[in-house]
Amino acid sequence: MFPIEGSAKHLVVGFGITGLSLVKALKELGATHIYAMDSRDAPPNHSEIAALGADCYVGGFCDAWLNDCDYLWLSPGVPLAKPELQDCLARLPKDHIGGDIELFARLTQGQTIVGITGTNGKSTVTTLVADILEKDDRHVFVGGNLGEPALHLWLAAEEQGIRDPLYVLELSSFQLETTEHLDVTVAAILNLAPDHLDRYRDFDHYAHSKFKLLHMAKQSVVNVDDAYLMDYVSHQSLSTTTFSLKNDAATWHMQWQNNLPAAITNGDMSINLADISLGGLHNYANVMAACAITQLLGVKEAALRDAILHYQALPHRCALVAVMDGVRYYNDSKATNLPSTVAAIEGFLEPKWLILGGVTKDQDFSELQTLLDDDNMLGVYLIGEDIATITPHIPVTCESVYSRDLQSAVTAIAKRAKAGEVVLFSPACASFDQFKSFNDRGEHFERYVHALVKEPYV
Image (tube, rainbow, N blue to C red):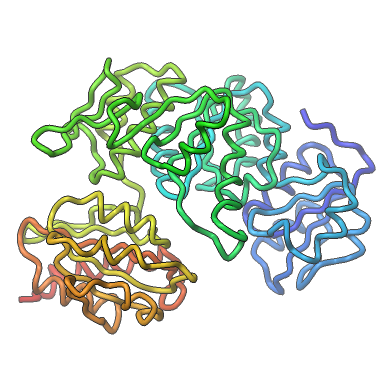
């Protein structure tokens, strides 16, 4: 248990759900001097944090508190490079600086923890792993960067008196930046691609924040198909289990028949793709990762098969919305970066229509030149504020259409799509030009698709 000194001053930066969880946990641990600040004028959870007894400061950074605190706890959205924090970071001992995962780590030494990170697929693998473990009758607490913050999970386990909790955590690069002591039983890095480059100086900096997780783990699961990841792993002394769509030397790999994917296997156990509820090659890789993780934890085969067969895709992540006249409509609004969209496109072997666009976040879209130069890519409908940034990277062999908005794109494609084809909404961009969030964007897409039934489009 993390010792709390009665006179120690704890400063929490950020009033989001993670900041709230930090204040709750510190109060539960007996901290009597808790301070919380947020640079926003009207941040969320202000009243809840104040009600817990924390002194609050909003609309900026309080230099007096930064100069006087004994511990600094940062929310994931607060970069370590923030200029206002530099004097405080230089003054405090390293082990007096952390985030919610670091505090969680100090409270859960010796307990079973699964840590899952990567650029794409984290949420799917995290929830599937939790489903498998629950089918195996484990006391599972799932969250982290997904759903409930890790400290809320710890509080729940304590309140319920669970002696053998099994924590399954989705972990972001932001969270791992401020984490040093997480006692991970099994770690997984699913894949790596450029992301959050508005926060990191380059891709190497971003990737190495993820690599930290491997060095805190007893066993690791890694993707053989990710060359950058495997180059790093090959130079480390790690206990690894592997998965791959392409390499049958990996622990878990794909079985192909007549150039079509047929099953996933580890040699001793095979699962036919017909018995996997998720579709798309990228999701088969996610399932293999979940199999590798849970087998390292000793789950029974029956639990694994049952969970995989009945798993329901998370909203807005390549989720099947409807099948109309033989055309399948998929909502992948969660794809806020190009690597996510690349994975989704490559995951469907059928002829497909793509809806793309939004706020590009300074991404390089040159990869589209080769990706969309494919007979199975029937056309691309472009939406959003940064159409002009994306357009030069659409190959001349691929039809591209400028749409006024998402609804116009859905309606236009519905008039053209034929049975056996896929309509894939995978924007590769942020949503805040036209929507509140990727969730809001995905919900609009689903409404537009369902409206096609009520209002005939041919």
